[in-house]
Length: 305
Image 1 (tube, helix red, strand yellow):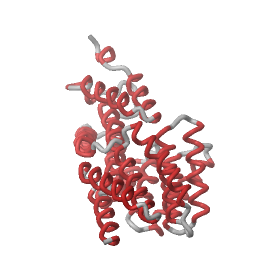
Image 2: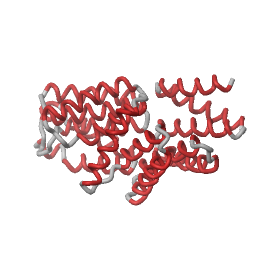
Image 3: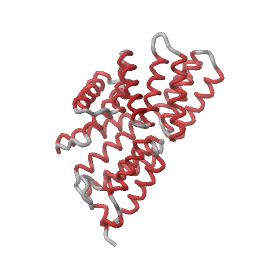
Image 4: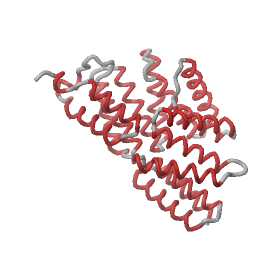
């Protein structure tokens, strides 16, 4: 049996399609089968792809694992991808693998690791003039800066990337959601609302459930933190996001929604509901090793005591 009979490029495309739609179970199955098929000499074969399918399968699997909070496995697979690409001296694959490993650290809340990996990926993109991964890396890095409190660094990066993508006729909902959160933190509320709603509309128009879920959570955050808060809007958005996240198995987002609802019900004096959501968020963050977010819950509870 030839190598092309053992593995088909369509399996990679199918996994990516499932990933975009939020069907993480099927996406993971596709990528895992690829990894199992591409062993031995096949690890270094490209099969006509720009990157090494053995690495591409790992990096997309890492993204799926990150969205579902399977961070320990994701780190293992991400580091495997980086190691394979470095060993075979394949820059395209190395940058891709690094970008998704950085994304995983970003979703986990390990911001120092995320910034370090993504800054390295950014430099490699420039050194080797490989534009394919540039938008994703730059938007992830901009968001990492935002979450690290470096709004002056992160916001211009995200704004520039969105302007460039729109000029090319493309929309990237995740970047709009990242910028929306940055605008909220910078008290640019109208910009934050506009961007989150555009991302939500894009997700609905293209049946991208993960984008819808993250956009709804962003709108919930805006409604909760604006002056004055809009409790009904916040609750509606959080509950819709929570429902989608639960359906898709997006545990980090699910935990974020419980944290948001805990804060909301605390503000509206619904103490029992508030405590239930705080407890759920705490348990989930601890189980996933999301230390940064666990500390945020604990700080919130300490402020209430």
